[in-house]
Image 1: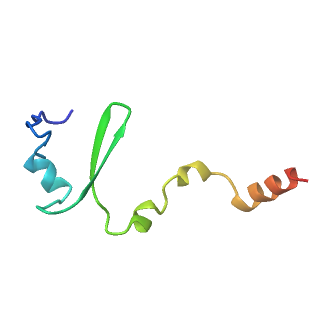
Image 2 (image 1 turned 90 degrees about the horizontal axis):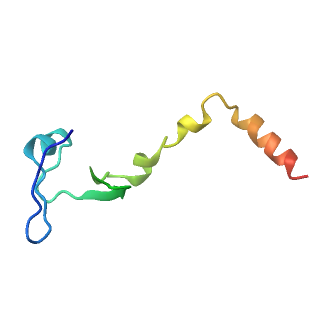
Image 3 (image 1 turned 90 degrees about the vertical axis):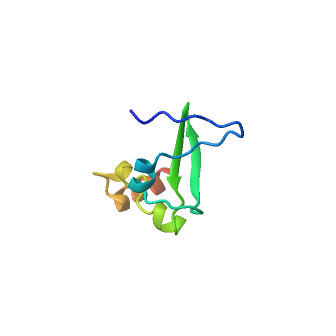
Length: 78
């Protein structure tokens, strides 16, 4: 499990130094904040969103020949 931090009166949260060092963020760096279910996710803002997104979802295609899949899909249109 993670660390316990307190939410300040302006709803600010201090990221503990161990975590800041691990994800290599410094003052004035930007981070992305998202929520998945009831979990808040904070990640460093990538220098390039394109590079960050490359390869996401590739596990869906493991063991599937893309050309064969497309051929079958196109045949189903007829």
